Image (cartoon, rainbow, N blue to C red):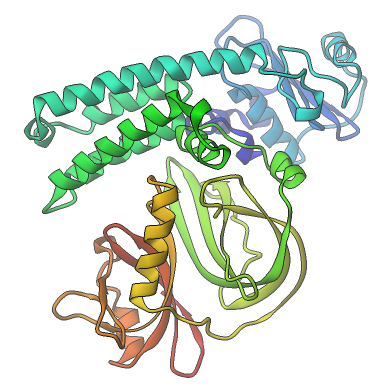
Length: 427
């Protein structure tokens, strides 16, 4: 249910409504449809109905987002088991279901449902969103030109609102991916020495992304998928599972990182196939206070089928099927030269790639800067945000380790280490 939200702001707005107090009337039919009336600012309650087999949504509120906050709240309420199944659906629910040709039938232009139920070609709603995104891209292009024209010294005096305002306009343009990158620019300004270079680089990447999105019809399909994803167009999990060819392998669970963003928790789990050597990233989401998926345990190996999202560099994947999980040993670590060569090759296909899985056989050291050093004499720094990372240095005691983590343009963020005895230690 959380993954169906079009952006984080929709989910934030839905969470306070996912209580029985907001819904004087709710109902469900055989786990296929759920409906309810939600108290709102209007005199009459908003009437919301969801076909769970699609999913497809209908709400009487004026929101332009699909699903709207009422539909999201209703689904969250239903997933918590707080919606009863007694009674027949009201007339306004029955008429909508009938108009769709029954549950699981074809969707109307006003509904959002499964791909098989859509008429061929872009729907009016998709065309409307494309027009909004195009308008947002034009505004972003103008804003970026203004930043360069005024010079980076102006950014030094700017508050967070300077970037929040343009990010909010990208949310209105239904380009949440652009909004997320713009909000992150405020942190670049306060990231220490060299912030000017990093900020200018981010401006250039945003301009490249806006240009690529405008000219996406001329891009190769994998790069087009990447561009659309970076802008904020989502791909439903059902579509990925239906269209991707599963990759079966014994997947080593290398590292895990939890992030808190806008009251939404994100768990990033990195895997690597023993046979294919292919990296994979499995994401899970939860509202603050709720539990994240804990089925992939660092240090284990699981035989599974993974379905990868379409992209120029396919990293994100879904676990389509799982067969067996056993304790695992230390993974084979690469050299630092090998890590940087792999990242460079991936960056050539996806210029906006800012996180890359790393597994290194190296020795941690604090001088001259905190980092990892391999036998060839190559070195990489630790990410400044990783802190002192004393557990890593204490575990090493000056000896080589196998370390897994995320490589970024600012350094390595270590997440897991294996000691000399092969025991796994989350950092």
